[in-house]
Amino acid sequence: MSRRTVDSRRFGTKPTVVAAIGVALLASACGGTKSEPSAPAPSTVAIGEPSPAGTTAGSDASGAPATPSGTLLVADFGADTVTFIDPDKGPVDSVTVGTAPYGLAVGEDGRAWVATAEGVAVVDTRVRERLALIPYETGDLGEATYGEYRGGGMGIALAPDGKQVYVGVNRPGGNGALEVIDTETLKVTGTADTGRRPFDVDVSADGRQVYATDHDSFDITVVDARSLDTRRIEVAPYGTEGGLGSWLKPHYTAVRPSDGKLLVPFEGEKLVVVDPVSGKQTIEKMTANTHQHGAQITPDGTLFVVGTGPITGSDEEASLTIRTAAGKEKVVPLDGPHEDVAISEDGRTAYVTGGFTRDGYWDGITVVDTRSGTTEKLEGGHRPLGIAIL
Image 1 (cartoon, rainbow, N blue to C red):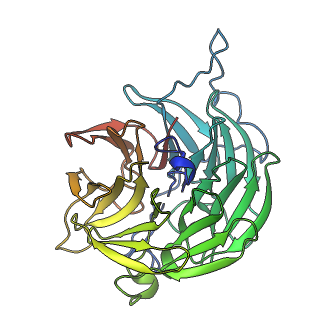
Image 2 (image 1 turned 90 degrees about the vertical axis):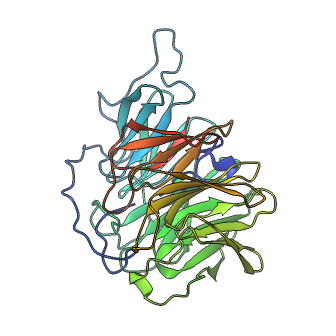
């Protein structure tokens, strides 16, 4: 997904999206099965129109922006909103964006780009108002609905110059697509084919390449940002046995600032380092020993990876791995499954969303002191997945 300051603008590479995910684990899930919860009643907003009265906060009496710096923004995958959360006080507002928002990215101009089942919503985070909902051009998405396998947007990222947004679009039962949106005209200007269920989208530091992490096809699609030509790189350190029913598939990717290589964590055991030019891969050891989803990296090369919890009896519980550029890891235990993470600009605080794509998700964020490893829970959002720090 994509964002960025140290968190939601992903250093010009991607939104924390995030992320970004769902519930009904069918055969194509990470693995296993489960029934979908009943969907919440959606708020009705016409495409291309601003949010209805009552969902915007506006400016204060002096005309200053209503949303202070440091506010958290989460995508409410279990609803049709994004929620603004004061990290000290909890939720302060929400804005209707569209069904089941997954990942989000925030630009330097304060606009958030939110991947929903219906289209990409554009939100002015300063006054907390939806400006537009841009429909997808990809066909065969099915009815806008809830759950991990719903059609529509998943990972999302901004180009470093802020002129384009890239969104991975899931086409249920088949390969997905990467859609390119012009941030000035709010129009889709191009599409490229990807693999199945593009969980995450990242952009190279120079803006020349876009990377879609294709969960159900065990690969990463490398897209030339100018021509939209594509290459697929299989990333399957455990092999592809089990196909759609396998748990051992790529979920999220981080672009290493020092050399542009792609870091793809697997199961708290293996970190696959991928050269996006040659496709060459090396594997480094990880220590959390738990199923892993969200991944973010800071400018100094510190990697943060969300452990969602066990998928076998030998796995450890949920955690946040903090891995230095030299490969030294600290594993912070978390209470229950989580999905994605955003990091404060000073690197001292990590905010981990409790949404998750399977059983055990909860409505809130775990706040982690990255130095001491202490944690506290902060309620807010509705199955929050993607997250950014405004």
